[in-house]
Length: 231
Image (cartoon, rainbow, N blue to C red; front, top):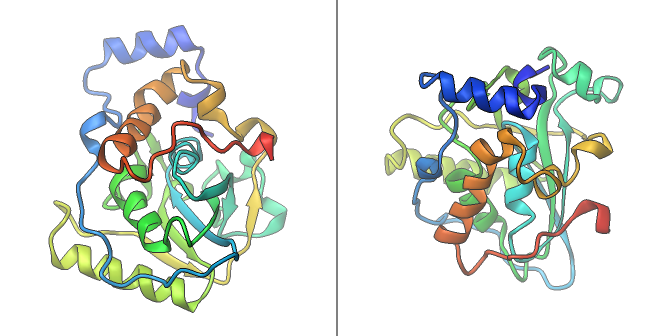
């Protein structure tokens, strides 16, 4: 379990204020990158699913809930067995699961490649191995859970493209995993960013991601989030 998420708000804020060496994500963490040269063609009328892992699912979910064309974004677990798809077990770091977000989207309005671009640019840092910001462990790994061979091909090509262009200071460590099942997280994790905008963890780590989405992807940004609990 990541204790920093559950420290009382005042104690957490005081801790951050007293420890300048304790670094979190900031608004300048987003990276401007080129769109993928290879993308999936749009299909009319058929919603598609993409699953991304990039650290704590609160922020990843919060970002994709503000993307136009996204119909739902659910926090959950992917990479492990159904029997261990609970927060307490996943937090131990030995279940194979990663905190993930299942994104249901309309490919006629936003492509899989555009989702990948947002994922690599805004939603997380793809060069950090088994960690994001203050969170460490394999459950916070950078991973794309490809739903089919076409998604796998596009994701692999995009990673190669970004590495070849040296889009980041370090190589991308994002794993592409296939054949895994997604399990929704507990209800109290859903819509956490929207419901808790003043929570210190959200303020420091996640709200800057949404701000960068609006800044870097204005045509894809939606001011009104698509919430799980409104489905």
